[in-house]
Length: 326
Picture 1 (cartoon, one colour):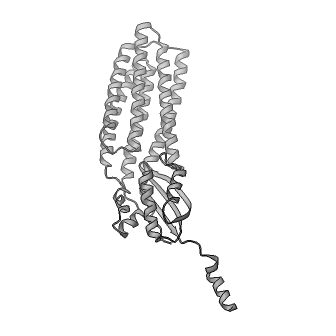
Picture 2 (tube, rainbow, N blue to C red):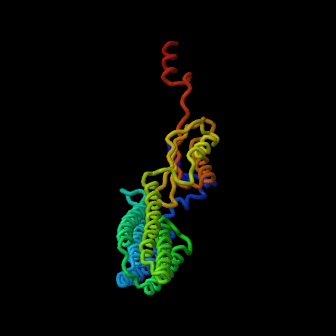
Picture 3 (spheres, rainbow, N blue to C red):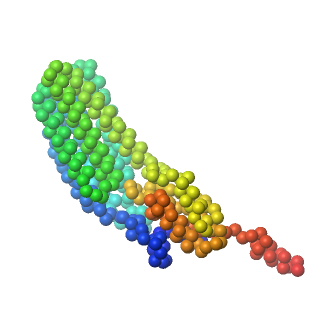
């Protein structure tokens, strides 16, 4: 039987069901805007990371050094995101029919793992500093931490403005926001050292930064594994999707229903529908696809129509036997 997808419907007839076909594969129409934002955020982050690392080392501030380590992870994440953005924009091939869209997801997964490793290092170092706190020059620490907050807020603004957001830009924005909160922790620690001479505040701030890093890592890894395991898209309820299909006129039954995410913003559904014989298979398939698009906002739909089972009284083999007996 003919498998009817939105692309096929687009060429088959001018019905309303094909109106969304041009939006099915937004292969990289807005790819350049996210890439420019990623580059800008990367340059800002790398430039200040060097300043923060050097200052933190000179004034013996673990909060600054750990925040610089966080910014190093951010820089790696942004560099991976830029690379993935460029790879994902490559057209599909005979070997990779969906193109390289999953490169974005793989980069986000690598970012999450890098964040987790960074957090473990910060925790270990913070425990060591808590046990044996050293002298800290709080004024340079305060100035650099304040500058780090400004840089992170600027990078966050660059990443969040405009359209064309995807997994990469959102993952990079999560890095930058958590790093901005890390800068706030470093600022508070510097004030505590200045006001009360409590050098352990530096270790406490580092632990808070590590919690932020771990939370960001957990979210990134969870979201990317959800995609890589081809789980049902977050906004799609499979029970409701099945109801939508079964309630379509001309559908007697259905099986092999699958819903998954190819890459960010590109969900897909495939299903086999058994016809009840009241309408043509292509018409039923087109209507199923349109109803899924409207009710569940999934545009990439492939429907396989199947003929209704033959009535036992009209089965060709039985008819042949009956004829021979006569």
